Each structure stands twice: as C-alpha cells, then as structure tokens.
Amino acid sequence: MKDSIADRELVVTRRFDAPRALVWSAWTEPARFCQWMGPRGFTTTVQAMDVRRGGQALYLMVGPDGTEWMNRARFTEVVPPERLVYLLDAGVDDDPATFEVTVTLASSADGKQTQLTMRTLFPSAAELERVKAFGAVEGGQQTLDKLAAHLAAG
Image (cartoon, rainbow, N blue to C red; front, side, top):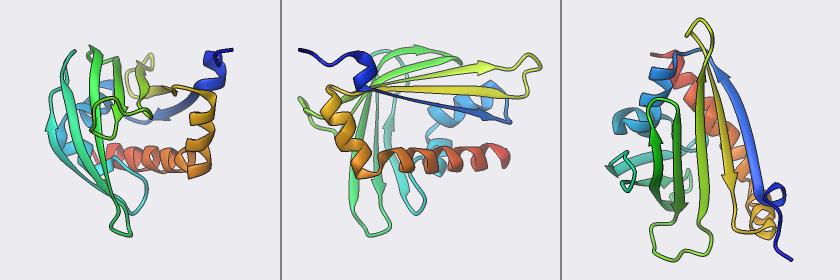
C-alpha cells in the first residue's frame, strides 16, 4: 500500500514582519538567498539561480565541520510573489531522495507581514522519518530563524 500524503508531508508555517515582496526577493535573489539559507553555522554559495518554470537553482551549503551539501532546486511552478514549487535533490539526476517543496507567501491585510507556508512532500513515509532522524526539522527551523533575521535587517 502506498503511503498517504499526510504520512509523507512536513508542513511548516512562520509569520515574518516583512512585506511579501521582500520575502519573495529573499527566496529568489542569489545575493539575499545565500545570506540566510541553511542552519546556524552553515554558509551557502549560489552557483546559479534561474527562478522560472523549468529553471533551476544550484547552491552549495557548507556545514560548520566543512561537510559540503550540493542542492539543486528545479522549479516546476513560479507565481511571483506568492508561490514557488520545486523539486530538491543533491544535484544528480534520478536522486531517490528527491522531494517536492511548495512555498506559499500570503500578505497580511496591511501588507506589513507575510505568512510563509512550506509544504515538503517526501517520496515515502520512511524517507520523511529518515530526514526527521537526521535533524532536518530543527535545521529547517534554524534556517527560518536566519531568514527572519535577514528580513529584519532589511
């Protein structure tokens, strides 16, 4: 029996004190993206970023211990400034751990805040559990903390 979406999905929401256009640019402009992407202690270098349907972003994250993590986001849907959908893998074709990420940005009524909802859909419930055991949930929260700090700095 195939795992249900609920068994394979991780959903994170965060409200930022920043207008949606600024949050969008943090996700889509290489100079901004590399300042916050990755958990505490990680550095990120963007090698390429083409944010459009069919485009991709290649970026290298380096952990505090020097471990390198190549990432490739292949964009399947781009609706500025409200929605990004991409497949994330390790930069190799047919990566069995590839997962889908949907980032939705909703503006508050006054336009001063943005609600981010990130849905990550893994290929199986077992892969979601493996990622959780690896510490990806805490790493994701740290990454969003860094995004909040980046947005606060303007």
